Length: 427
Image: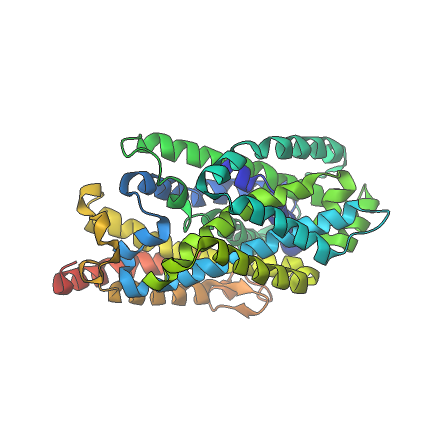
């Protein structure tokens, strides 16, 4: 499941951002990818063990930390993230289709619709078919990527692109982007283990999830960085990239990678329906098919509109994801380890819909606000540079430590706030 969902063009596009946006070379780009992925996939693997033990999906589980009312915030944000990722996947898949259709060039809008239709067909078929599809869909994709590696290997340049404070700022900013992609699965992790046996080893679930995430994330993102270093010796690929962005770069070396957009889109649309139904009991009356269809229409329209600004959309989406998911993960982990003593017996799964037996939500709301404050102070984006983020690297661009500060501010404030809330409220 995780291997297929991350063996995609979108993963490749994350690596492309290293040289294209942050001016990193192959060595520092690859090291950044390895470190931040190994760190940020830990909570995803950890949360995957929760689904098997409690039989609840990830956003439903968040109610035991956020409370019924405050949990609506992560639910809304996750719906936005599911649609956002579908936009990204569709754009880059459509770019690749356009790049390889040289005789009669396919319009980007048509490519987006093709990707969306394929996603809808599989998403309609439910949990078992999604798992079956994801079980095997990575095999042709990894073959394509290895062939692509053989095409570009002799043209890559492995020198460091820079050094000093400016380079440090660029590494941190790229790290925030990588973190956003890796952490992006934390809000979905338990969704795909709820049907596993309750007595299944948590260590096995954790290990295979961690391995299944990091293998494609590290390999394919590094491939994206490597491809961007070929332009000196292969100017025609530079022209292809200028014409069709990431899709053009892939299409210049090989014709088949567009198929890798669908495996990443499927969990997004499948989880969008599950997430939306957590908003309110009335939302559960809406068939998931209808939710998937509406979500698909929304992301098709936005993907067509945003295709000309793909890299800017991708970078912005990723860093915002890294900020809020750092907060989300911290609150869930601290609630589980500190206030529930890390014991599954301290949860009553049947209480997930009873607001009186869930946390009040004031502690999580205030801690979330503090985490947002940390993210604002540490961010370094084109549209805003925080006070602390601006102190790192080049003052014009700064260095993004928003997700690190979001984690730190949340981690410090949630325990005391939750202590007083639990003492007063009782849950």
